[in-house]
Length: 78
Image (cartoon, rainbow, N blue to C red; front, side):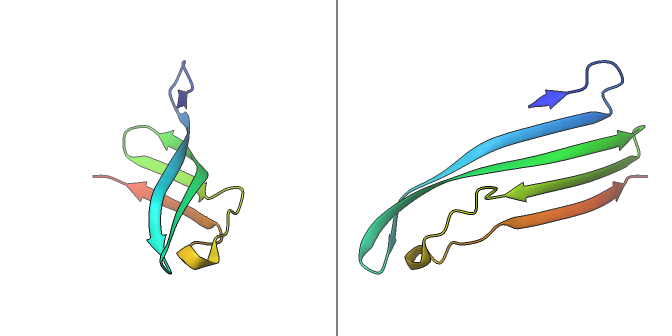
């Protein structure tokens, strides 16, 4: 995790998610995915973000786990 040190308007978070011994089709599987999200803040009320889960597009069809998950959004608090 990194946060821009001066105004703290930007934040980048990256993480691995490990699925271990996932049982599907009478077999055990494991998979590791790399994920990240970027946040931009405007004061205390507004935030926008964009991120990708499974950046390297790991696919194991017997686990029914495939593809990337893209997300973008905005948040306003009051």
